[in-house]
Each structure stands twice: as C-alpha cells, then as structure tokens.
Image 1 (cartoon, rainbow, N blue to C red):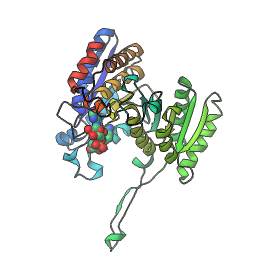
Image 2: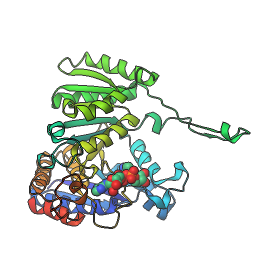
Image 3: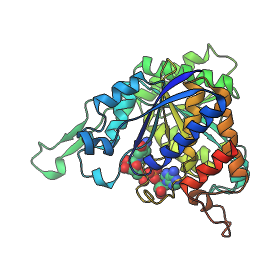
Length: 364
Ligand code: NAD
C-alpha cells in the first residue's frame, strides 16, 4: 500500500475548523482508494506565536521539509494585530513559503454550474469562467529588501516608509515556464499581467515572457496592464484561460476572481516548487468574524486537499473523486451561508461547516 507523510497546519480563526473537515475527507478517500496517510499536526501563525513566540517555528519547517504534502488552514486575527509586521502570524506564512521555496502559486477559479447565481456578477458573464491564476509567491514587494520605516526626520510629516520591488530574470523565468506548461494542458492561452508602462520589474517581466513565447508557438500570449486586467476580469471574465503575474498583482486579482465563482470560501490553492512538494491552502484568510461559529465554508480546504493528492501525491483519481463529490454536493442545492448570500433564494437554510463536509463525505 502506498504511504504518504502529510503535515496539517491548521493555524488560526477558521483555519482549524476547515482543516479538521479536510482531514476527515482525506481519511475517507484514503480508505476508498487504498493508500495510507500518516497525518501529523503542526503550529503556524498566531497559534505558533502563543506557544513558541515564533509564527513559524524551526520544528514546523523541519517536519514540513520531510512531508510529502502540507495542508494549511489560515493565519492571523485581531489578537495579534498589534504586533510589529515582522512578528505577526502572516510572517509565518511568508516564511514557510520562502524557506521551502514554494515559488509557484496555482489558484484555479472555475464557476460551478449550480452556483451560477452566487456571484454578484450576472450569470451570463460568469457561467463559462475557468481561469487559472499563476502567481509568483516568493519574490516581489512582499520580500524585497530594504524595507522599513525611517523616523529620523525632525518633523513627523517627513517620516517615511518604504518597500522594494525586485525581480530577477531567473525568478520570472521559472514561473513563466510553468505558466506555458499549464496553458498547454488547458486552452493554450496565456495572459501575462504587469505594469510595464511604469515599473522596471514589469519591463523585465514582459521581456522574459516574450522570449519564452518563442519556444511555445502553440500558446497565444497576451499582455495586460494590471489595472486593465482588473477591469477585464469583471467585464469579460470568461475570456481568460491562464493568467501569470507577480506576487502583489496575483494576490489582488485572485481575490477578485473569488467573487466570479461566488465566494472565497470555495477557492483552493497550491504552492509548488520544482520537485513535487507543495503547500496547499484555501485562498481565504482566518475570517475572525465567523471563527468558532461552525459557519465557515470548508470546501476551499477540501479542494486544496484534492489538489495535494493530484500535484504532490500523483493520486489523480482520488483527487477527481473528491472534486466530483463537491460538485455533486453543490448540485444537490446544499449551501453554506457565504454561498447563500448572493443566491437570491431566501427560502434556503444554510448549513454549517461540519454538515457541509459530512455531505461531501456522503457523496464520496
Ligand atoms: P478573510 O479571507 O479572512 O475574510 C474575508 C471575508 O470572507 C470575511 O467576511 C469572511 O467571513 C469571509 N470568508 C473567508 N473565508 C470564508 C469561508 N471559508 N467561509 C465563509 N466565509 C469566508 O480576509 P480578511 O478579513 O481580510 O483577513 C482576516 C485575517 O486573515 C487577517 O488577519 C489576515 O491577515 C488573514 N489572512 C490570512 C490569509 C492566509 O492565511 N492565507 C489570507 C488572507 C488573510
């Protein structure tokens, strides 16, 4: 029987609630498809600060490096908001991504037919949406040095803060190469998003995309400035196939894409490096407003677990099986509160996090 080591990092807020449900789904799918998962739990984010005064303890990194796949919930919350940026829970997430070299963040956004009315956009616009956003994850503004705040000025109004946006050719090349591979597995269309009319990093980005395009003549390449990309994602979202972009732009555009599919609560993500190792996590955050109330949608975490089976464990059938069970559950009309909001059907009663996961398991 195949065996895999999986590290679960529930984190904060709704993180533990949604990862607990994804864990149950993983246990069921392992039984059905006859493989063995050795599941370990670790600390990250605020939970790790409370225990070890460190948002990403060395022990977490060591176990993560030894694991075949890592499933993370979410980090952060008001309890830690007063800490300096460098010590906050979110730093733990940035550190595990960068220390383990997970530079390629895959964020699929596909509209489920039964959720056509869940988006605030008209269903004619969103019904054929099937986008893959490939976001650079370990470079750009979030990591660039120097960064900080200068308070040496005599007058308060002269104080300033600064960040550095830096990309190397190598960082761009390795991501864009994966984007061409992804486009070839899909509809052969790649849209690169930058701000090449203003930023030097974007001019380099565009150059690299155009150079690599010569090796992939079957892929139709387009370029959009990020402001226009945001507009086109709302105006004609179904016109996109694969979008490749840098860290900050990808962060923002993928949240926008969340609203095309109805809710951030159903969007999974995978962060990969060159070997098959990966970090899998919902796109959403720790949602402190609904934490501890059994109201969180566990589907993003469950679908992230499915991505882990596909990309890191090469268990495509098991991954397909989970995704089919999620589709069947949504087709049956079952809704968590976040999906009901835009649905316009006031007769429907939302179900909780545990109950929604139970329905998925019944459909497996
Ligand atoms: P958020 O994604 O946590 O929440 C945004 C909105 O979406 C909230 O109204 C929330 O209730 C809702 N929501 C999110 N996930 C949901 C789910 N699974 N089911 C139902 N509704 C859901 O973003 P935020 O409010 O900007 O941030 C809250 C905290 O999370 C902050 O501390 C932030 O730094 C952190 N954060 C963490 C990550 C991460 O761990 N990857 C990502 C984004 C934000």
